[in-house]
Image 1: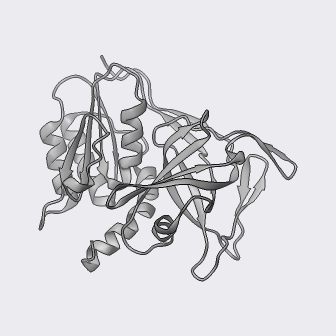
Image 2: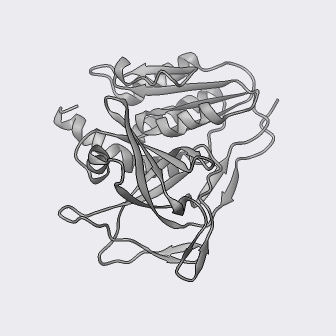
Length: 278
């Protein structure tokens, strides 16, 4: 069956919210899951604006989190203007993009996963976050709904893509076969609760892009009309796009956007690896 519909873009009002940490759990030695909650996950009044409840519709929806400058206890924040934000220039907010790992509107819980490599502001915040810690975030601003009609899906990325990959795995309710490949440092970084994921381990002296591309091309289904979702650093995206062309499968129309967002999450990992501290 051919892919009969393109991915659907859904615009959402962007709302600045003040949330607090409910739990902090180390999923693996280098991945920490922060569970957030608070009244502002629901609808609330923000100045003259009736802010709607938090909404997420796509497996790779992301939010922007706001962090303090080094030496400060409080972050600079954008201003809420109806369904959009005004970003001041001085001081400019320190913001990072993070994929929504899980949202439970009944329990009032939102999960974000942090890769704990390096010493960037997001990783440093996540290391010390504890129940009661405050985090401001905004979004999601847009959701992308996958196409309908493919014979199979193939999803691939490194650890910065794991929140989206995990959400695809856990929330997908369709009947189309889904093939998922995740690149991590080694067995200790595998997430055993994610069923059906093919875990790909880094190899000394071989680029991440080559390792993941080889695994994807070897394990990808042949025949039929497939759809690929790919994310990661620039070389990973480049290599996986080449694999996609050889397989004859259309990619998600978002990999470049995902690349920009995931680069923010990956920078600590890459810097730490260059220093040899991972």
